[in-house]
Image (cartoon, rainbow, N blue to C red):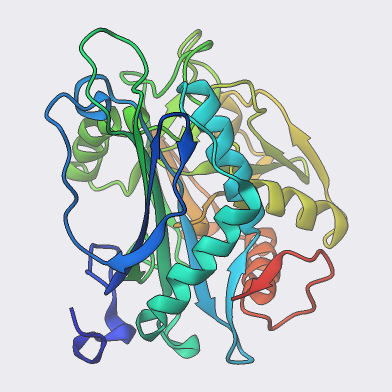
Length: 341
């Protein structure tokens, strides 16, 4: 779509085609140089490993227009690291991390006209995808791979924006099990979440809260986002045990809570029962797409807990202001998180 036909002030979180993408292929044990090409279909064998056995991973990033007018990325080196950790788990070739960051910059520059204006609140979503494109018959890694980076202008992931959402705790579905691929950003983890999300949204909830697969007691993730809660004035989030995604926004929020708000932070098992106790006063979820999204209520069957009369809590608001302030260069970036494109 031509950029002049896009209403950047009323974007949703849906696919809009931009003009250019990056494409690189891995063959005979090495990556080619890769290049920026016009966005469009790619050819793939019906025997491709990604189609038959799900050997595919991806990342999610954003390019933003800052208050200064600069186009910026947020901690892109962490996405490079996570892509390679996912690749190792899926027996895929890694991609040079410094080159990854430079290529992302190139793709953003090639699609600069699609970066939503600073005052729109939107972003240019960046999607790196690495797939086993070589044909394979037995269950084994492909010998050839394709790496693509494309972009899409987006608005808020949750249509509500920075407003509290209502979530349902699931005792029926789980997202990942110990020893599996929960920590990897693999395509295989996402298709199974579509049905639970559809069912919970049909009941009026924005998303689902997954519990651990072993005991169905401890919180894992919120759909496609990490979970946080304030209990006894301590900010708690589920520990990284291999079943949840090590979110980059999650990591940043822990740093901000501790160093800017002076909060004690805990990475631990959080029982869903704790959410229904008075000591639990706020909850929110985080992610590249979700940013920081307040949780207004959680429900389990006929039980419901409402936080702050369904409004964002004070700690949630402060963390949101700090994070987005740094991302948009409205605040000093003392952590060196922002990278100018």
